Image (cartoon, rainbow, N blue to C red):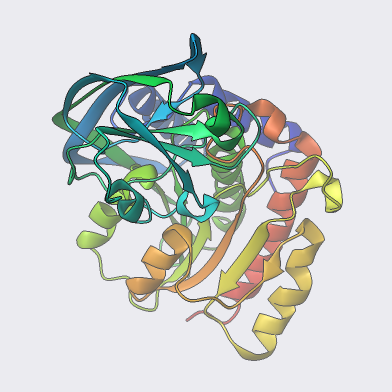
Amino acid sequence: MVRFSADELYDVVAAYSGFGNHHTGTAVDRRTTAWLSDLLVGLGAGVHEERFAFDRYICHAELQAGGQVVPSLPIFYSAVGEWQTQDCVVVDVDEAVVGNPLALDTYLDTNCEAAALILAIGGPDDLPVQCNRVPVVTGDRPAVVIPRNWAARVGLSAELTFSGTLEPGHSANVVAILGPAGAPAVNITTPLTGWTPAAGERGTGLAVALAMAADLSTDHRVTFSACSGHEIDHIGLRHHLASRNVTDEPVIHLGASVGSIDQGSNGPAGLGDRRVALTTVTGELRDEIGRLVPAANWRLIDVSPWPGEGGTWLAAGASVLSFLGGSSLFHTEADTLDATTPEAMALAAEVAIDAARLFLSVQP
């Protein structure tokens, strides 16, 4: 049984989102790391932090058009320098770029003479949707993202003020060990950072991962890893895996929007409709997992390449069960506590833990 009650799961999400925007290497990142470490110690875990360095991008942008401030966000690692320019071009961008750190490169290399780019991406009206990035500056033209419903209003009257710099940065993964020595091993992993308060995107997965670690540690040796740097090409997870051989190790990945709800969803407890699970197991066990996970509105799918950090674990050779999804608030600053409910959290945790135990039933 899940040791965390519905309200306790919800409280984890509330605490996580309450810190603010979870950019890697920021004060919010550091406070979140300390908070999570304390939670894990309270569960009886041995905890340590894996620190890593990276080039942190510091940027500020304001876009105006027709005397109005346009809702916008700077595209991280788009350019270094300072600009104040009216020489802007609006480019319509496919929403599929949002979670792929390489996908914006084609747009940023748009063959035009404009000094700055304004990328219009679909999403909720008036809410810009931030895009994942590789933490390397490769261009010399600043870019911002705006909601698509503002594209026509921006037109040719835009003026962009933008500054971008790089500085030495650091962050840390939180790694914990729970459960009896000598028991069957399992890795439970979830990302720790993101662009926004990320209640639904990150907080729900973190809460379920904690509940799963508490449950499975009764009869498994659990390695729990919450890796920073998800939004900048999984750099924390890549650091975590660089010193490990995880070939054939069982890994359960709690990815994006594990407990997110969406208005209008027909899913149980309001859980959103963009929810998928993936696994490396085959045969009848796979079929059993496939029959179980729809209880929390997940669909077991086959796709290549795998999305999210589950795909990074898979590429490292692990045996993986991965849960993830999306929601209408994904990568927007409106992804706050309204993104879930105690009932949705309890259902997501119960089904994920039951599926995890099925997955582990054939692991060596």
